Length: 287
Image (cartoon, rainbow, N blue to C red):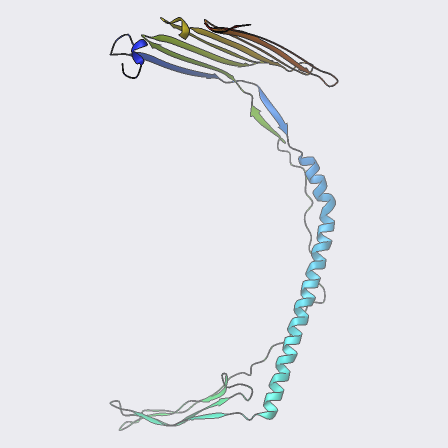
């Protein structure tokens, strides 16, 4: 009562019924959207030769650039090796002999000969000999000569590989996309209580024309809560487009109607609108 609901509620305990129902009926019609595969095939076949020529040109330029860069690097590396070999003598690192205790193994001295143009990569390695005291076990020394570091000549094919693409052929598969047409939809809403009853019905039909119908009404002990709202809209697609809309509202205080029509053809466009409104309250009366 403190919130002001005592004017609407007949008792302190209220109950209501709520019902919602939606139904969809499938439409057998389908919309066919063509896929322009023929245009795609013609475009590809006309431009495939140009693509091959551009590809071969780019491949030739890439091969020439890589070959020139490799040959330049090889010349600089060979020149560097010759200059270092003339100015520097090979360095030989001596590894003295040593004895492994507990096992009585004696290793002879060994050497590592480095390249004259660098002290990272060895040219020749002499392994030590191993002898076990008090036995006939003996491992002789070995000399390992590593191959010299050099860049090999890059073989360049005199006749480049042929590159070709197959000709595109039109497939026999369907070249249309089928989309189901919109079906019929029905929606019902119902609300019942001790104060008022509200019903709403909406339906959409998609046949030769698209029609939407809307109806909402209420009944109540209070006249202010009673109303009826109805509307219909149709779209006709014969000989152009025609959209017709009609709305009506009736209530104790507010009422009116609206009618409009819009027609579109290839040459003309027509439109008409009619609206009537009525307001009746204690302080205002207007039509």
